[in-house]
Image (cartoon, rainbow, N blue to C red; front, side):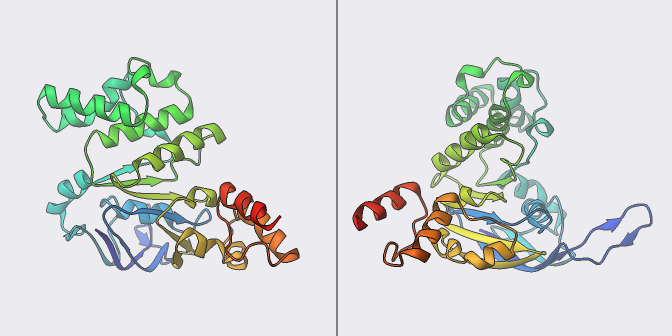
Length: 278
């Protein structure tokens, strides 16, 4: 379990050594249970990435406490174990890929753990299979597409066998095809590992177990995708946009209230509701 208890954080001016008191996180309390697929939504600058970096101790709270399976990130002796439990994937895969071939990059982490060669090979094959990159194992990463690079970055994290996978805006630099590849991968991972997916693309939350929304450093909403998508006016206020399917349903419901007693959140639900009403 990842638990945030009244966590606040603000950055410091390195040159003047002054602390800037504008709180990027403001008394955030959140619990992510093992096995959950949780999506965190928020506009740029809402504090999402700062919160992500607290999940494995890259940042330490100024106030409050973060614990991972009971391990407090403020205690330096816990950080090695915490970082083995929590794998973090950033928005730019080029910042995580360091080797000259795909297989070398994915094997890098397990090798640094000092694992036997047989176990390294097993983890390499397993991770490449999960992200569907077996055919690219000997490719040079710089020759891959953005989506393929991000899948390699995720494979490198999965090869470490983390218990939690945190994706910090992992789709924000990708084109629609690349984004689709990563969301498809995340859907396949659902149930096999705890996934905390941080994004400003609200349609990526459709299949989540739980959705959270941040704005101006505060947690402003939590619920199922359907519950969050029903907050249409607030979503606009928070600087987000509804998925096209849900927005279409809203517009139709305003004119034909009988159409959607339950708001559809997927294309299938929208089509089924329209067919039933015809």
